[in-house]
Image 1 (cartoon, helix red, strand yellow):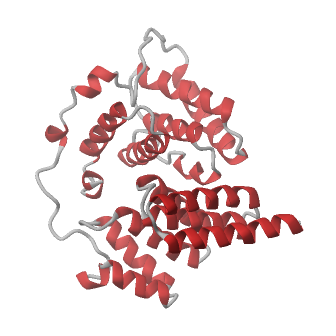
Image 2 (tube, helix red, strand yellow):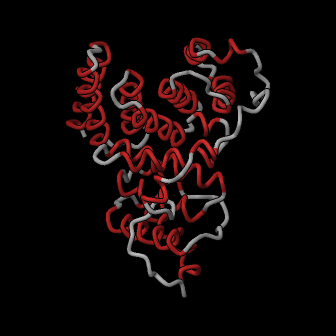
Length: 293
């Protein structure tokens, strides 16, 4: 995340790919890595690699909020291995994804890739990630890809007072329902997160976005927080906020119930009785609503 905040995408992508090689059985962790790789490749202009990781994320979690991972960058020149990897990931996602929004995104990405795939020889049989084999990823030198230091005076928008960017200042804005101001400050923090808790910040960002009815964007921030630190206070808060969006906005009581059950379990694991009680009460309310419908 430090490399991403510095906009050193080469080092961030190399670091994330190495982490992906070390992650074998933690599905949430793999989801987060594919999400971040899709976002960073898109920011760097790597349409093919971004599409591959977006499809991998869809296959792990087919929630409609991940439709925002569909890359906006133009089609890039890349290797046959990267092209075929993306095509295979999209085909795999198309077979398993249930969300209509994600299926549309998959078809658009497949349509974009198809002209480049014609005539490309699929001679490889080795699994790749971002078009690189495991050996090539293991050989990557993250330090060599790193920029020497943070840029001077990182952009903070019009809010330059460091005290404005502290978590307590954000909480005060959210408590006062000053959501537009909170979003502006969150945008500034995103440019330079410093040493703050990423998950707590993502929850704050999500609450601010939700406050101005930017529900889909808020759901993405809450999902990112829950994936980034699944067994934390911020992770539980994110699950509860996601459940409320499912219940109030999407009218999906079943999904809300599943999220609240998970929130109660995690709250118990971290011994936070307050959050456990809140998740339990919301489960009861949700179940009552399901019974009346």
